[in-house]
Length: 560
Ligand SMILES: CC(=O)SCCNC(=O)CCNC(=O)[C@H](O)C(C)(C)COP(=O)(O)OP(=O)(O)OC[C@H]1O[C@@H](n2cnc3c(N)ncnc32)[C@H](O)[C@@H]1OP(=O)(O)O
Ligand SMILES: CC(C)C(=O)C(=O)O
Ligand SMILES: [Mg+2]
Image 1 (cartoon, protein in one colour):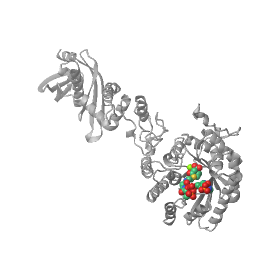
Image 2: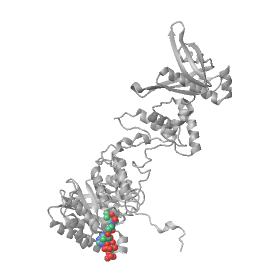
Image 3: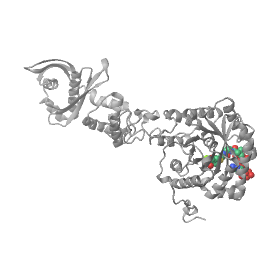
Image 4: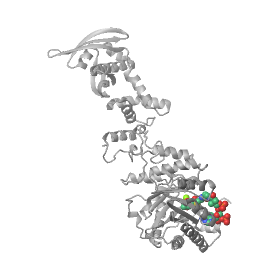
């Protein structure tokens, strides 16, 4: 039967009975304990689970990033999973300050195998779980609440018994009431209290209580309420590490984790770049960098984010989205004109060691090992700022503002025609063609200049006009004035800029002149030369040639 309203088959998530919630007015002031479950929850969700070799490379990268708690697998799932954990232990891959975690269902034979896998490690946490939500109790287990509690209690008793036989390892317990976020809070409390009554944690040897949103089912504020409620109601809170394990079914796992930390969670489990079952586990990279941009050291090192991303993509055989926070290919790239303009101005004003204040960039790309080069790219949505930035960064050309406006029209034409992104090299080629290679009809050959107080500046100039060399002389109150007079053309100099390109013996001068030829429109010419005067003369000829190329009126003006 077709439902009239298909949405009617879903029910709204019930609110948590917490009227004096504290978390909304709290702030995060320090990082939580990070736990990576890439090699377990991440791995179990892959189309092709990682080979032992890939798992080891991933593990070593996690160490380098600085993660101290790493869930290394589900050892009872397969011989390969078991062997991987043994290899880590026996080949001494686990640093002393790192704790491995091994996951198991609360079933006898699986628990035994799991404990066996970690024997000999300096520190290991056995992570046991059973699902507690009403739908699991009814559909999967066909059990009442008390029977579900017994699964967890018996499993914990067995773990306690088994680990006592291997005192050379410092053992810990993590208990997860799986599907916590869709479970009645009083039942979650009942089962967690029952487990801790068996394990008997102390503030010195706390037990981890991991409260997963196995399937994210509510807005993040509801999850935060659930966490605060548990923190306030569990027995022996001081002997518990409250951990969260958000999944991203509603796309709000990051928010859920952050609000949960405000609500009292001490620890967060997740995966790099949000890999994991279905829509993924919460993304540890985003969480860490979010803290970083609030001025809080997350204790994780993502200063070479591209290397981390590359390895994760290779091991997971899944791409990281180009717009993934902090790490995607396009997150430090602006195509749109007004963004480019603001970023360019922001970079110019940014003090290297000062507070970060570049518009549109929440973080300095350099802090992630990303380069500024990729920040600004040009396509049909771009304005003058983007191409000016690229010419300055790549070619040392600092175009005056009005020239930027003039040249951006040519760039826009090119972008419209191709419909593609335009590389810095193409912009430079277009700039050269438009301004620097304008050698006809006038081409500079040589000049000699003298100066005295009576005549001002005198120039003996040789130019080629349509390939025919001719000599002329001019006097003026400055070199450009004298040069224009020598040409004998109706030209007015409207604006002039110059700057050096490079330093030392190889330095060259770039000159930009804005001229009005006859009664025509003003337009720019550009000259580059090792001699600053020659550069300015070339710039004048560039403008004149451009003008002649564009208008018949220009020809007449020149002829006049
Ligand atoms: C939310 C999560 O991510 S939890 C982690 C999930 N990860 C994995 O499952 C990956 C590794 N798992 C595996 O390789 C296998 O599932 C194994 C080896 C653990 C178990 O395999 P099997 O023995 O074939 O059982 P299966 O996977 O079908 O699990 C279902 C059985 O386990 C029971 N079960 C499921 N979870 C639990 C639990 N936490 N505690 C106790 N029993 C459980 C179910 O009731 C069911 O029992 P039934 O067969 O009597 O009906
Ligand atoms: C095993 C548990 C913690 C889990 O992965 C989940 O509930 O999502
Ligand atoms: Mg999970």
